[in-house]
Every structure is written in structure tokens, then in C-alpha cells.
Image 1 (cartoon, protein in one colour):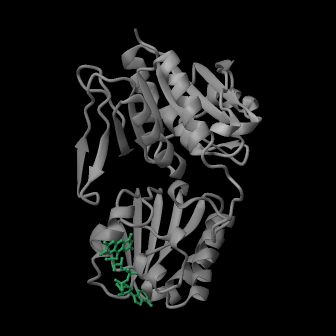
Image 2 (cartoon, helix red, strand yellow):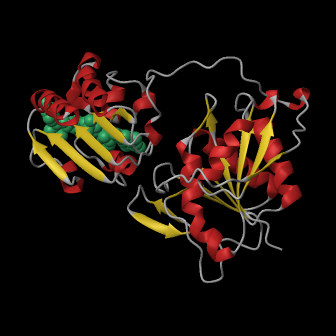
Image 3 (cartoon, helix red, strand yellow):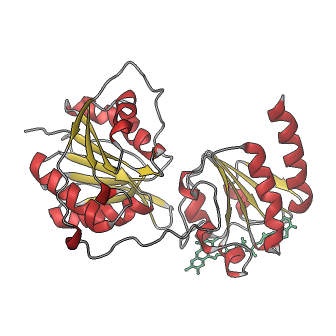
Length: 332
Ligand SMILES: Cc1cc2nc3c(=O)[nH]c(=O)nc-3n(C[C@H](O)[C@H](O)[C@H](O)COP(=O)(O)OP(=O)(O)OC[C@H]3O[C@@H](n4cnc5c(N)ncnc54)[C@H](O)[C@@H]3O)c2cc1C
């Protein structure tokens, strides 16, 4: 019996993350094809008021696990709540974000439920038998594969942030909201959160940024990243700064800014690569960006083969000009 398509709506600092809206928007087609209900699950402390907004993005129902013990994300507590809930209600599909939290949580849930998980997916669809058949990149993004599932339920997938477009919210839409039981004895937690040490950047996480300006080895000094932050400032919220591994290894930028195979996989609307050559391991982290702009003084740099727009020139001259021009353009 069909029990619904569930999406995990992640919460950060008391707010719903965009990934939840992406998952709701991107699931509508498969929900329609399956003729099942679309359910959002939200976990946290004081999160009940957030349920209404999930309804605006298409959730028929919102399951709210609201408890002090869920205030901060912990693998043990979140896994227990979700596994209990999934075992009890048996959804046919469970989708979550391939965010830092999703990458930690979803494999744990799948393993507890003895079901399959397609990780890091970039497209959501059903096959001809109405089984989930998401696409995911392999070989550092050189090819995509379609994942198929066995008989086990739920079929689980983690979807990359920024790949599914968000629909316009409809404030007249209301979801049924149900508070669910949270049964996590504090003594059952094997790890508890003591402190959150903020990363170098106060800005949004790279994986969720709409615009990323990245610097490579050519930045030459940590101080020089300021020109990239200045440009980011002009683009406004949703913009952040990344780095190549060469820049990170040289000590110009912290590791949490690294984009690539051994860094973060990003998928912004606009990626501006400044003084980055375009090594395969860097491309693995940003090749699915919707528009790529490369600034490099070497016209033969491989990044130009991947870029939609290329500027051959010295980034220390080009970036400040872009900052000034965008400032004028965006203030008009
Ligand atoms: C297992 C493995 C994993 C890896 N993982 C990653 C990863 O996750 N991310 C990653 O980025 N790399 C990764 N690498 C490293 C990768 O192979 C490259 O070495 C790295 O991406 C190069 O960084 P870069 O482009 O900044 O530096 P370079 O390759 O040195 O390129 C610098 C570029 O800047 C240009 N330039 C110089 N001065 C200027 C200027 N003033 N203005 C404009 N352009 C200028 C040059 O023409 C050149 O193209 C990995 C490598 C291995 C082996």
C-alpha cells in the first residue's frame, strides 16, 4: 500500500534551508505519477511554526519532531527519530539533501532499514515500473548513471543542493501538520554536541550558494582573497567565495572553502573561476554549475574548455573592474 513520498526538510539556526523547498518542488512530478501524498519531515526544537511554509511549497502533510533533544543535529538522535518513524509509517520513497547533514544521516538510516540509498543525485525521476530511478554522476562527473532499486522500501536518495528548481510558494496552500513522538533517551546518545566552532566564512555554505567566486594558486596570498569577497559583496546574499586545492594547500584559503573532488561539490547558478587552471579534480566539484566564467591569463588554460564565458587577463586587474561594473549595473 502506497504510503507517500517523504522529504527531509533541514533546519539551520531556526530557519528552513532552501534544500527542503527544492526537494518538495522537485518531487511533485513523481508524486503525481505515483498518486501518493507528499510529506515533509522536519526535526528540531521549536520547529513547529516552520511547518506552514512547507505547505506553501506543496507538502500535503508535515510531520514535526519537535523536542529539545533535537535542538542541534546529532547523528544518533536524528537517526533514531527518523528510523522509528519510517518503520511505523513505511513511506515508499524517502529523499534528503546531499548536504553535510544529509551525507552523514541518510546512509545511517538506510543501513538501519536495510534499504538502498542513491547518493549525490542530480536528477529525480521514476522508471517505467514507477520505481525511483535517480541519476548521479560518476568518474569525477565524466559520466552519469541511473540508479535502480531492489524491492526494499523506502527507496532512498540524497539530492545535491541547487539542482532542483524551487517553485513559487503558494501561501493559500495548507498542509496537514502532525506532531510525532520523539523517543530518544538522553543516555542512548553516544555523542553529544559540545560546541560549534564556526568555519572561516560567516557566509552561506558553498554547496548552497547561488553564486561562487573561486580563487586558485594565482591568488598568491590570503589577503588577496579580499578582491573576491568584494565582488561577492556586490552580488549580495547567496554569494560566497571558494578556492582550488592549490590555493588551500598553499595556505591562501581554509579547507572548508575547497571546491573539487576532495573538497565540496557545488552547483551554483554562476561560478567564476579566478586564476584556476581547470584540473580534472577541480572540475569534478563545479562542472555542473549552470554558468561558468573563467578568468585566466593563459589563453590555453583547460578551464576555458569548460567555461561558458572566458576572460583572458590578469585577475588582479579584471576582478576589480568587474566589481565596479556590477556595482553600477546592480544599483541602477
Ligand atoms: C587525488 C587528488 C585530489 C585533488 N582534489 C582537488 C580538489 O578537490 N580541488 C582542486 O581544486 N584540486 C584538487 N586537486 C589538485 C588538482 O590536480 C590541481 O593541482 C589544482 O586544482 C590546481 O589548482 P589551481 O588551478 O589553483 O592551480 P594551477 O594549476 O597552478 O593554476 C593556476 C592558474 O592561474 C593562472 N594564473 C596565474 N596568475 C594569474 C593571474 N594573475 N591572473 C589570472 N590567471 C592567473 C595560471 O595561468 C594557471 O592556469 C587534486 C589532486 C589530486 C591528485
